[in-house]
Amino acid sequence: MTGTPTRTYWLEHAWLGDTVEPGVALDVRGGRIAAVRTDVTAPPPGAEPLRGLTLPGLANAHSHAFHRALRGTVQVGSGTFWTWREVMYATADRLTPETYHALARAVYAEMALAGITAVGEFHYVHHAPDGSRYADPNAMGEALIEAAAEAGIRITLLDTCYLSAGFGQPPNAHQVRFSDGTAEAWAERCAVLKDRDHARIGAAVHSVRAVPAGELATVARWAQERRAPLHVHLSEQTAENDACREAHGCTPTRLLADHGVLGPRTTGVHNTHLTEEDIALLGGSGTGTCMCPTTERDLADGIGPAVALQRAGSPLSLGSDSHAVIDLLEEARAMELNERLRTRTRGHWTAAALLRAATAAGHAALGWDDAGTLAPGARADFTTVALDSVRTAGPLPRLGAETAVFAASAADVRHTVVGGRHVVRDGHHQLVPDVPQALARAVDALRG
Image (cartoon, rainbow, N blue to C red; front, top):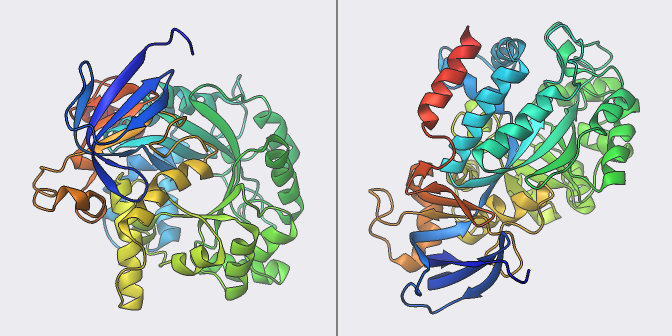
């Protein structure tokens, strides 16, 4: 990198993995951290000061961008996941490449404002509403990739195989636009998608009910050959478990294991209703777990066995899923607080462990192994949380990790830097001028 200019950021406080250090200078060159210097008591000449607590960029490991259009509208009345799903389908029916791009651009900008520097987009709205292909069969996926670029964050497009409405059932009228017909046809379409500087291409099995057992190995093989991340919705609902046992005589986890889906590059999303054998299969294979607590509570899904999964060997990451809120600090907090409610005991994870789930572990689950830490050689992706807001003022700065996890919110994010470039400065997005207005326009367009 000879000749590449170096930019220095002075961090008033920085979380360096286990502790909060005051006075840290980060030298950034070529979009990566070149050096980390501690005990720097004042900003060096020419350095840009970032006041507050700087964390590695947050990774949102599970997103359905179009669900953001449901915020508020699905809070009226009662129901279950299955009644919520009908409202979600109605929104999916109205998406076009143009409207999806506009919505996703605004949603990803909202994520940047919340300190998120990378998103895993679990993408299954592939085709036109009648199931026919667009002139570019990947028009919808490309719209999401471009939206992330314009919002200034990284994306792992988890292109999702979705072939059936349930065990032995063809796609329904809402789902025909999700389906490629077969896993082989899905794989052929996905092979056209390419990685780029801000984007990685991964794969997903929507669920065992949406991908027939005989097609699972094709998706797993596609991801394995490319060493790409592979995600799957797993045991989010007890009804899925019951239907799988009726169809195959085993749990969804066992079915995935028998067809080669589990492994260290695979992440199960939710992993809520599991048996002890399921937990052992996931942990023993190194399969990750992405918990989405704000969505799991919003949809009344239940509380997953995150502690047992981690103890068994399943790395934990976090996602905002349906975007009832977009706040990774709240996701981290909720995982601990849910477990407190379930067990009536406190302190299942330290603040540092919860931050690792929101940063390094999330990036690893999305195939960005060189992000999520403030260390030499890592991507220069980081975010700064205010320590002087009405939520965060008072605690000692050395307790910044605890303050961030248990008191701060997305509203306290002051700066977000991706690849050494400010995407959010002083709480204002630098690429999308008016994010609230962009969100309002995009959602209104879908409401017609």
